[in-house]
Length: 290
Image (cartoon, rainbow, N blue to C red; front, side, top):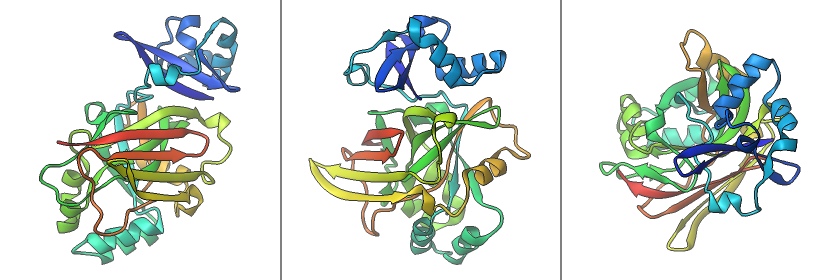
């Protein structure tokens, strides 16, 4: 099942997509307005989110086919924190080495026992589908980073989403200690368009992923890959994030950059970035300067 966060006026509404139809769960139970509400109900009832949603379908109204266009979905969770993993794909290791003044350190991360896991964003720095993602005005080389996102509740995996870990390669490449400035800033992260429940996704390590970047209706980048190329497992990355760490009730962990535009490409304001992930959907954003 895929869960969407819609908005009707100032009130959020929770929708679920299953068997080709989109249902308004809030119409069935007004107390369920967000995916977080559903997660808390799951804890109270000791039922999975999918089981709760399935039992509500009979009383839920069916939304029209264009509902996701008319009521553009927001970020599917108001994550307390977004964290990210780095250098989990060979292409990411090669890109980090190419940009860095200290390239050898990235080879050590790719092959080491301990993965790189770092803080990425707070809710006020995170945007949802069709919102503007940011490039820093003081950066000369900016790229989107398409990633499989893991949605966690009380440290346990409950679902998956798509993440765009926006990055300044010029700032990060100047000195590895500048990583927070290259990664954490206004509109530095987007997630969406939905949460695919963990119970309904057979294998997160075998999903086709693709990304296109367009400028003035011209496609500048169009490549695809598979999450099976990730050198770490989702479980390994989650364990590293939650161990010895006071994580919020709801959080998202991005699992590493799977596609990297060739050296020399940089985003411009107005560019359109689309990231697709098999079984989850497509996350679309327009680039703005911050």
